[in-house]
Length: 193
Image 1 (tube, rainbow, N blue to C red):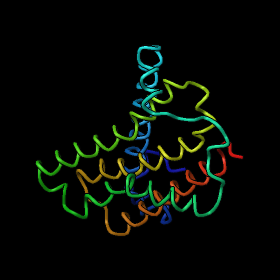
Image 2: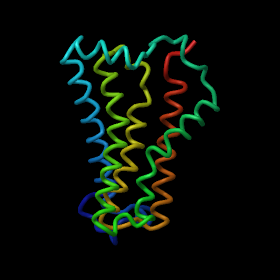
Image 3: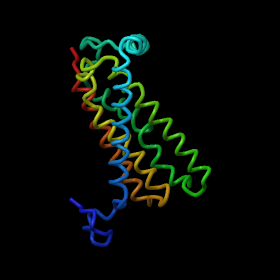
């Protein structure tokens, strides 16, 4: 494990591709995603039936093993293909030069915040409305949120210093790997017939 006191020059050669601020930015993004998810869940659960009833009606989740598709490789690939663009697009912001102007930084920040909210709000609301009954159906959530935080953390770093092509490619591959793991958990870990 790399200690915070190590400088980039003191890092082992195998770890020098990691921008020094990226692990910290990822951890902060991961904590933020979870805080927002659990905050929304607590808000909905605390409000009780005046909020849980319409949310349940709106989401219409059927928490039954019989409605889940059978596990298979095609399901894993479809879930990964769906989640990868949602989580990884912020990695490309540095390539596009979004970090060069105040206006584009603000636009990127706003779009990223909107993307995070659009993903976190329904999950938090579902957790608050369905409670622990939902937990067997979301075993992928820690890994999925890790992938979402990888893209967000990359943008936080790139706001000041863009990633090199190699760093971006490795970070994109890491995001893809984490989301592939999440898809495996979601496909094989949920109750199904």
